Image 1 (cartoon, protein in one colour):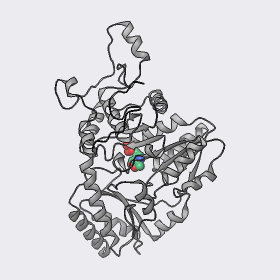
Image 2: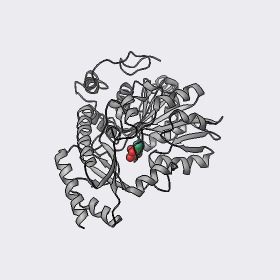
Image 3: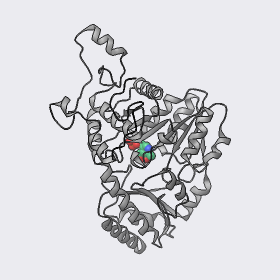
Image 4: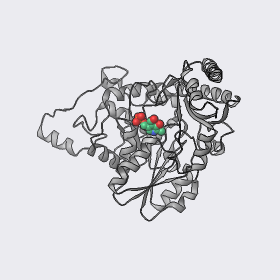
Amino acid sequence: MKPEDAHGSPGAPRDSRGIGTRLAHTARDPAANRGFVNTPIHRGSTVLFKTLDELEAAMTANTRTGPYTYGLIGNPNSRELERMLASLDGAAGAVVVESGLAAVSVALFSALVAGDHLLMTDSCYGPTRYLCTQVLAKLGVETTFYDPRAGAAIESLIRPNTRVVFMESPGSLTFEIQDVPAIARICRARGIISIIDSTWATPLFFRPIEHGVDLVIHALTKYQSGNSDILLGAVTCADDAWWKRVKTAAEAHGHYAHPDDCMTCLRGMRSLEVRVARHQESALEVARWLESRAEVVRVLHPALPSHADHALWRLDFTGSTGLFGCVLRAHPKGRAHTKAFLEGLRYFGMGFSWGGFESLIVASDIRGWRIAPAFADAASNEGTLLRLSIGLEDPRDLIADLAQALEGAARA
Ligand SMILES: Cc1ncc(COP(=O)(O)O)c(C=O)c1O
């Protein structure tokens, strides 16, 4: 395949420029857009051809570099975003779809067939678990949920028909760090496909393809877009053959990324480095403060030395983002205490998703659906498992808010 640009294309030399420079200068072409810095939004379904020859040639051309054929297959905005994502991950290519969950689904559908066995981390995002138990199971794919801390011991779970190992690190809600290089090595040696949901780290802090992973999922809804105003997802692919398989699966299922959303996401990504640096700093400040509070049993933040997998996190990650957990000590008033605390917060909204400019908090009870009950039970029996997404507010205000809500809940 012919390289499409000097960065992130198959076989291209590693980009040595700083991340801010790459975020500012990759995937845009003012000369092709009458000098405008950003590429205009190309809405549309139909693409017109002047001749039958052109139409027929387009139908067999590469859908990443060749002429556009139909809105569903790609447009200048989706291709630009894909170029940026591939560049950041050191991937051969990327496929953008309408949500992070669609990216999980398209990656799994591109890799699995009836009769296959899937090893899925027990710490996966809830709807990923649902996809396995409610959809893949009906299509003849059997899933085994494994302990995210298994590391190389995952080898003992591999069966002759194991086709995919799916990781997510840190894990959803419980923040376990997986030994991604060890698992990826075993997968390569055994001819098994490795996939990771790497939404938490963003490509700024962890690049799984460099550790031997085949497919990487990013929910662009979170930090890349950064404003809680769109849904979008992507799969980045280690090699060209995988890119073709994922792209084919996306087209076959009718997955699509709207050009407005691609443009919105790319706009968000220009400032990704500075935003994530602030999320990181503020989250660490809030997490350290929570650690000092008697109402908190423990904080689940991989960048804190108190985290069980901190050493592993230090080996593979170059930073942390704004999402972490904590366990609020069990209170005699139970749910009423949790309710008073959550409803007493001024700046933390109660709601799903994360990675936006505004801070969020949710409480979860994971008992009953995790296979690694030791941790799930401990976390839930000790108290209320909380997940905090630290936004771009002044961390001093966030800490003051948490303090007044904790004090208010104690009085309630
Ligand atoms: C780890 C993780 N992966 C994937 C997703 C799905 O992303 P989306 O909401 O864009 O479908 C989420 C959403 O919260 C998530 O937390």
